[in-house]
Length: 346
Image (cartoon, rainbow, N blue to C red; front, side, top):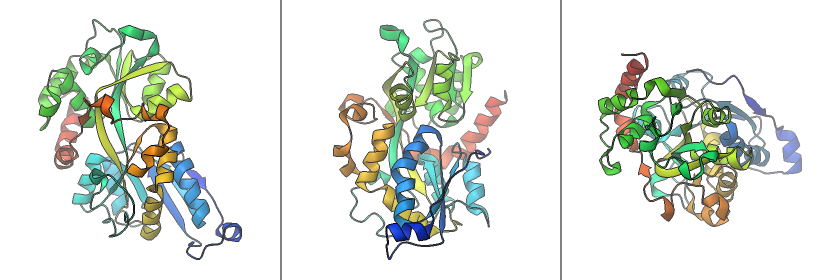
């Protein structure tokens, strides 16, 4: 539940930037704290959003990292000091946080002129990408590679340890899909059935917390296969040359949102940053680096075909499962408590 100690500071002096690129609307002597999920994901955000925004407006921008813990979001949003300005949140927590009063409403007109996907538009948050949780494995398996979550749970056919996220959101869906539940019958989730299915391979599970860990587990041969975020696996293969493969079959598709905590020190700058990150050129720049799908539909023509094929969505990925963010927003507290008891052996 602790935020990463690594904090990247992009210090850009307003006076120097103003001299190089004067702008009457560029705020001076201001700073912004943006918190996201680290690794190649945040590196792509830094290149596409954070550094260009800082240069354009002369903002000293501080980056933070976390692993999506709702308790930490709540703590920071309610803090009287040291709150974040902008935080990247998954779909369920985005809706839950809005309902519980943790986030400021999205200002009217913020998205004017932007072709943002309807599902990305929320009252208290706005989607900036969509991603999929997929099954990843060593490329050496070749034609014998697993092709479904059912294979993932088959320890006889595929011996070895399994990597799964230490989070009920997504992990429970995977277990139910492996147990034969049809994708259109997943919700409401049968939590006890999912936990029973997980129990069948519990001694072989390696739980991961951060998005960087699945690729590390595969690189170290610590697992035979793992759940993973599609962009992280794609980045590991294309940039780090890690010999991995993956399947999108029954991948879990959902949006990632920007939200502004209710006690954000600089809300006006925060919403300006969000608007900046949703412009089509910025969205395409980000997507081409990490293979997450942009929410600005006008960015799609600017994405490389090779990158597009590694993204969620599209006619070749029609069996993807859409995560029910509304269900999670309403049930995450109770399900999270049950998950903690199960993790403790109860």
